[in-house]
Length: 420
Image 1 (spheres, rainbow, N blue to C red):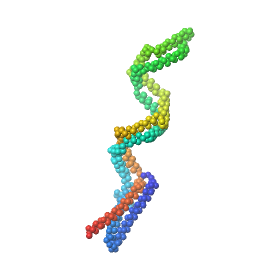
Image 2: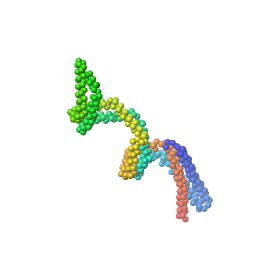
Image 3: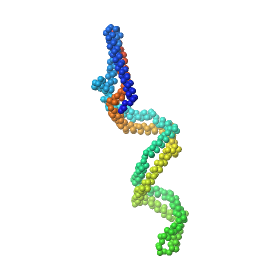
Image 4: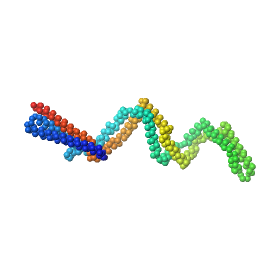
C-alpha cells in the first residue's frame, strides 16, 4: 500500500475507461429519455411512453449506483454527506474489523485443527521423505544449515559459554560422594586389580632397567663421613629389596601389600562419602583444578576439535553422520507413510504446535493487520483500492442502468395494463 506500481497504473486506466463507459451509458439513456418524451408529446404513439419510462428508470438506477460506488471512495460531488467516503474515513475501523474477523474465523483452535487434519501432514510428509532423492535433499539442507550455524558461531564465545557451563555445573554439585560410591563399587568388583597389576609390572620393569640410577640415588643421600664401600653395600641392599618387593607384588595376588591397598581404597571410598574433612578437601581440589588455565585450554581445544569434526562430517556426503541421518529420514518416512499410529502422532504434534502459536500470538497476529492498515495513508489507500476493484464496481453502474431500465419498462407496462 506504500507504492503505486505500473500494474496499478494500468488498472487505474482500466477504471477510467469503465467510468467513461458507465457515464456514457447514463448520458445515452438520458438522451433517449429526452427524445422519447419529445416524441410522446408530439403524438408519436404509445411506444414513446414505454421508451421514456424505461429510459427514466435507467437514469434513476444509474445515478443511484453512481452515488453508491462513489460514496465508497469519496464524497459525491465533494459534498460531505453522512456515511460517504467510507474507505478513507473508516480505514482504521475497517482494519480493526478485518483483524477481528481473521482472528475469529481463521485463528481459532477448531479451524486450525480441522484444516490441518484435513491436509494429513503425517502421511504426506512420510510419503515424501520415503523417496531417497527427497531424503538426500533434506540431509543436504540440514548439513548446510549445520555448517552455517557452526561457521557463524565464534569459537571464543562458544568456548566461554561451555567453560562457564561446565564450571558452574561442577561447582554446583559435590563430587566426593559420587566418586566414593564409584570407587567402592570398583574395589568390591575387583576392577582396580588390573590397574595394580599394570603399575607393579611397570615398576618391576623400570627397576630392572634403572639399577644404576636407583643405587646412585641411595649413595647420594648417604652421609659424607661414611665410607664409599658401605654406601655401595647399602645401595645394593636397598635395590634388591625394592626389586624383591615389586616382584612379589607382581607375582603374588595375595600379597599383604595388595590387601593393604584394598583396605586403603575401601576406607578412602567410605571417607569420600561420609567424612566431612575428606569431602571438603576434594571440593577444594576440584575448584583448584577447574580454575587452572590448562583445564580451560583443554575445554577450548575440545570444542575446536568437535566443531572441526562436525563440519568435516557435514561436508562429506559419505560420512557416517550424513549416512545415519539419511537412513533415519528414510526409516521415519517409511513408518510415517505406512503406520497410522505414527501419522496420528505427527499430525497431533503439528496441530498442537500450530494451535499453540495461533492461540498464544493471536493478538500479535491480528494487531499486525490492524497496525498495518492504520499506518497506510488514507488517500493513497483509497486510490490503490479503487485501482484494483474500481473496474468491477463500474459494472454495478452499468448493471444499474440496464436493470433500472428493464424494471421501469416492466412497471410502466403493468401500470398500463391495469389502467386499461
